[in-house]
Structure formats: structure tokens, C-alpha cells
Image (cartoon, rainbow over all chains, first blue to last red; front, side, top):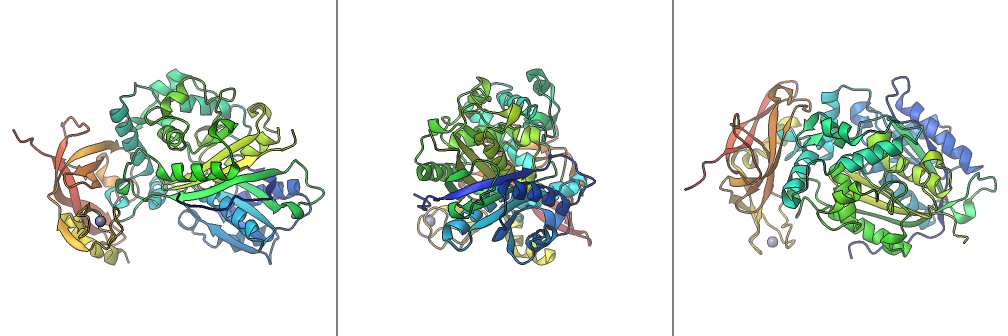
Length: 395
Length: 133
Ligand SMILES: [Zn+2]
């Protein structure tokens, strides 16, 4: 009902690139971006993109660098093309992909390079917290000393109160992410954790502990998109079709939501993307959701319609979300184990989903992956961007 | 810039002044001039009582720049008795056992010292309220 968009048609991802996520003291923002761009361009074959869309959240604050479109296009040897930054807090990556799809669908460009890049390690923690809090409401949240972690903690406490969930209810998301990170050579954390490790973890902001929160990481990821007739003959891997693409917003401040425990932007964009793709939820092979905090995984699963309200945490408990389960999530470790790369997250999600659908996921591979849903969230779910990617359609 | 941005919202922050929608009578805080329920213009001022209850809360041990001196501090989402939720710090809670649903009332306190010139920003916080017998 909210956005009756046209489904995308004949738009494909033909190349992906990702740097490892982590603390890249030795590399600048532009060097990280370039590394991902070079990989994606190599995979895509002989094609010069008509536009570069940069997904970034905090470079103007943390690196004192805006105007990333021109900066990165030039640095990557693409002077002359058009380039711009898309910013929607933690959903920037999904939003840049969304705009690439719209640009190609419009017919005004035939191919777009999307690069998501974030560099947190330039600054100390209090500065980063202040920068991150700009994704909330400056006048009515940040002024009170609110952090993103505090907002997630308050949502978790209210969830525990309303649904009377047991102690450790969210552990499954953290354990699954770390188990999956162990199969991802680009992950910041590549070792599984035991449930006891979660139970013993120090509190960050009660009731939210260290293993409920994703670590911030530097990183860059890139995607080359093209319309069907622009795909070069020397493209390296099977093309991946964009089957659904939708973005929606809710109030930025949690206190302005009708119901803080319901991510309505997730509901809106998921329903629209599924309808465009002509799919039911049980046809989704894997779901790369936004897991900055474990509570967000539960809330996203509920608002996306994979669980009843108050029941999302149970999917984390019974093995459903593992790579062998009925709805694998965060298959490369998600933000929790791969590392939270801010505005680049949505681009990592897309690149990881492409590897799954092409059967190139290595140890992280989900068997028979055919349709992948990816979803980037900004702030406390104020922006939600959902895409559905489709693998080879030959039977 | 900073000074004027705080000046613009001074009344709202000092005294919890919001708005009431003339069409559907919903009470609005923070003020937004357009009713979130019916979409009509809603610029009529409304003085909130300052009474409410804790919807949720948490204590912070890491603060953003400008709030480090207050650590540790407790934040809450407070459900005002007139309807809206507000985000604010809880104050005067040393030794109080906090819980969801706890009655609180508004007080005006220093929120933070801002910018290079150390300008003080004042506004609402909430403290525990004695429950009516
Ligand atoms: Zn109204």
C-alpha cells in the first residue's frame, strides 16, 4: 500500500568485491574503496560504468571528507562519469543499491558501480559515539546523551518486559553469527563462540551485553550492476538478477514511533520487495538481515513476517537460522562477526548474497540457494531497504 | 549555529511544551506542527503535566562526546500521561530500584555543556515520583 513501485526488470549484478572487515590502520578511506572497486570491475568484465554511487555514513564527520563521489571516481580512474554519495545512516549501502536499480530501470544509464565504504578507526570512542548518534534525532535524542547502543538496550528491555522472554533469549543470534563468521575469511571474528561465552559476557548497557552488539569495522564492498543488454561478453560469473527492490522509512526517533517494538519500515519494504519478486516467504533461501544488535535480528524477523510478534527470538534458539536451517541468516557472520561496516553494510550483504547464489560462498555456502533477501536498516530501523536477488533461473 | 539551535527549542526543553491537534485532540511531543495521527496542521501549544511512567530504561557506561562527565547516567523512554513517549535522562535515582512502569515526574536540569565555549544547555529530565496512595 505504501509504495506501489514497478518491479525491476532485466537488471543484474555482474561483479562483486569486498575488503576484509576490521581495523585497517594502514589504509585510507579511498584505498579501501579502491580495493573493492578493482575486484568488482575485474569480475564484471570490460565495461565502464555510467555512474558511481558511493554508500557512506560518517566520512564527513570521522574523516573530514565529504564529496566522496568525485573523490573515489577520480581515485579509481573513472574521471568523467557521474558520481554521488547516498546516505541513509546504516542503510546507506542498501539505499545506494536501490538508487542504482532505479537509475538503470529509468534507462538513463546502463550500468552503475556501487561502492560502500566506512572508516571508523580514525577516531576515539567518544567521537565515534557522537558521530553515530547523528543518525538519531539531534534535538530530542542526542541532546540527552543517547547512543545507538542505549536505544537498542531500551528496546531489548521493553521486549523482555512485554513478552516475558527467558534470560539469554537473544544468545542464538550471536552464536549463529560467530559460527558463520568462522567460514568467512573476510570476517573480523572467525572463531565460533559457546552459549556460555554469551552468558558470561560483560554488560554494555543493561540488558544488552558485549555479544549482543556488533563491533565497528573499517571496510569496503562494491557491486557492478548492468542492464541485460550491457553485460560484457567476458563477465566472469553467472549474472544475478534483482528480483525485488524497495525502501521505506519510519520516524527517526524511537519515541515518535507508534509502536517502538515494531519496525514498520521493515514490514513495508519487505512486503513490497516480495510482491515485486512474486515470492512467498518460504521461497527465500537465505536472509541477510541487519544484526547490529541481537534484538534487531528478532525485531526484523518479526516485522518481515518470518515470526509472530514476540516470537522472533525463538528462531535463534532452535537452529532455524543456521546455514542448514529453514531460514539461514547472516550467513557470512553478519555485522556481529564479519564486523559492522556502517554505510557499507548493505553492499557487503549484497556481495555476500551474490556469492551464495553463484555457489562461490566456500565454507559459508548455503545449499541450493536460489533467492536471497537482503535488508539494510538505518538507525533504529527508521530506514529499511530490502532487495531480493535471484540466481540462475535455468531449472 | 549551536546557540541558535538550542534557543529554538528552549521552551520545549525547559517546560515540556508541545502541541495539541485541533482536529483530533491528540497531544504531540516533541512539537512537529503536523499531526502524526490525522495529518492536519497542529500548532496549538500544549503544556504537558510532566507526569508519566518509565516505558524502558538503561544505564550508560560509554558516552558520546559532551556527555562523558555525567557517566554513568540512566536514560529512559518515558510514557507521558497525556500519551506521547519522550527520551530523557532519569535523575535522583541513586539507590532506587528502577523498573518498567515506575511513575516519574519532570524536572529541569543541565543536559550538557556544549561546544568550545562551554555553553550550558538546560532541559527536562525525570525523577521518581511518589505514588499517590
Ligand atoms: Zn490530529
